[in-house]
Length: 201
Image 1: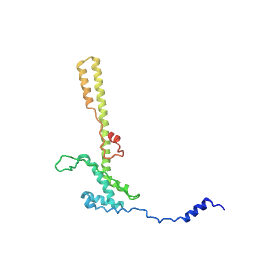
Image 2: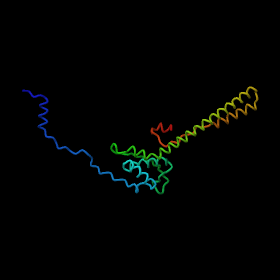
Image 3: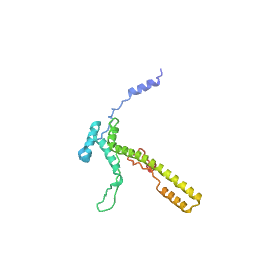
Image 4: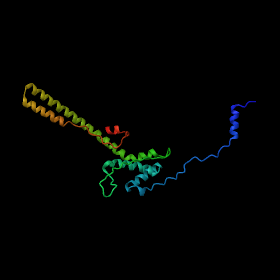
């Protein structure tokens, strides 16, 4: 009688001794709790505590997002002098990351930490919208004045009046120098951090 492949595999599995299973996990020590009062400036403590309490999340989730947001507002206006008797200045960049398993309220906590920055960005967009409306009116006025100046230039050329011709040219040159420039949107955030896109912005 011949044994099938299934019979041989079952016999081999029965004969083999299975090793004792080992525990799957990490032996890393637990992360200590953040002392909010000791590590944060006093004006931020209440905000961080309240946001973390409402989200049922560790306060450091909100704190890191808030500190990085404030660092973005300071930009390059603040420097550090590592050497006491030297003029060497280092402009620091703050980077932050929240590392935790899924469903630990990382995104909602980050939203609370960046909320002041988003509020400033929303205000900047509203101001820019109003400025663009005013700019469009200025452009319309400019176009009317430029059309009138070109018409005067054409009339002076037809009349062969050198004085009026020069006056019209001067007027057109002055208008070109005073052409309204579109307002620039003040940006606080960007979702595209590539060098090319940031250069455009």
